[in-house]
Image 1 (cartoon, one colour):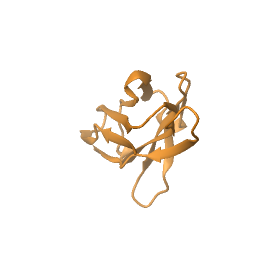
Image 2 (cartoon, one colour; image 1 turned 135 degrees about the vertical axis):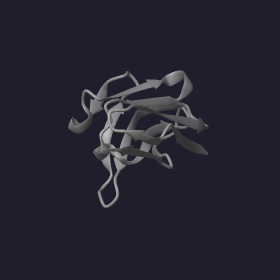
Image 3 (cartoon, rainbow, N blue to C red; image 1 turned 90 degrees about the vertical axis):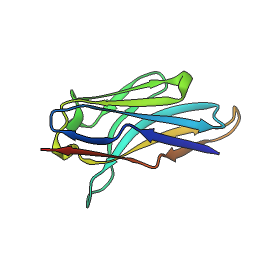
Length: 121
């Protein structure tokens, strides 16, 4: 059994900061790509940022320069530092990861349960 558990969401005023965390637990041999997605009410889920196991990163244009994704491979954890938050960043943020459970096993894609981020004016 593998789980991704997010934390760090909440309510913040525009211009403020939040840091999200996502930790994988269970039988994990290696985590490849990890990423953050978000879904606002009435909208499709969209990519926010991703990181490879080597630390290469990719960001949505809307968050470049404000958000930073990082990871700690030893802790099976990825972080999303969100600065200069705007009301349009309000959404449920989901963690996503491609995980290999055993050395010879296949890679599966997992999602976390989501954490709410609300940015007030």
